[in-house]
Length: 211
Image 1 (cartoon, rainbow, N blue to C red):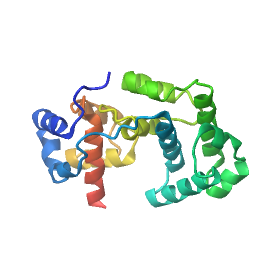
Image 2 (image 1 turned 90 degrees about the horizontal axis):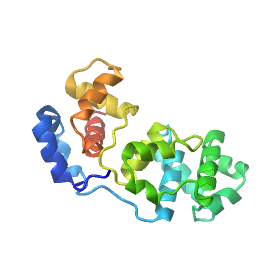
Image 3 (image 1 turned 180 degrees about the vertical axis):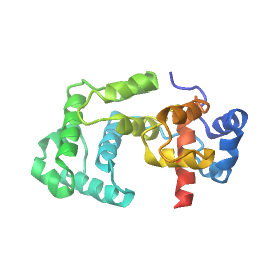
């Protein structure tokens, strides 16, 4: 279930007590963390956020933002299940979406409209179960589900083991060889529970510094 304490100071104190190496290696970015994790509170906000995550898959931030703006424009400025289902595939393609992404956002729209997927209910169940429910939708894999849990639902104990930025940051901090085994990464991340979302934010910030 969601942690009752999901704030920055609680997370940082936990990291200091269980993994001083991680705490010290990321110290320069502690102040950049949000005091609390963003938690969207309406179905409409959650739906738009999930569509945005899908459009950003495997894209640089700037390109993803441009495509999302165009997607919203073809939906007449309002991203709802109904508006997405009304728009033709050709219009979404002109906006910059691939065929697989178009199928995914339409499947999400159908699931939300038909109440197969209740986005608000994902706030009340364990992270793993919420991720599984999202991945029942065609085209939603682990990464998209994990990003949604972190950045839309504000879930505090999420770790995305398949995210390359996180992998490279961990390898650097712990002196691991490139493409370290998944089991090694998970074992390190386990120490950060129940604040793995904050740990991911720190890893991304640390990785960005190295670029």
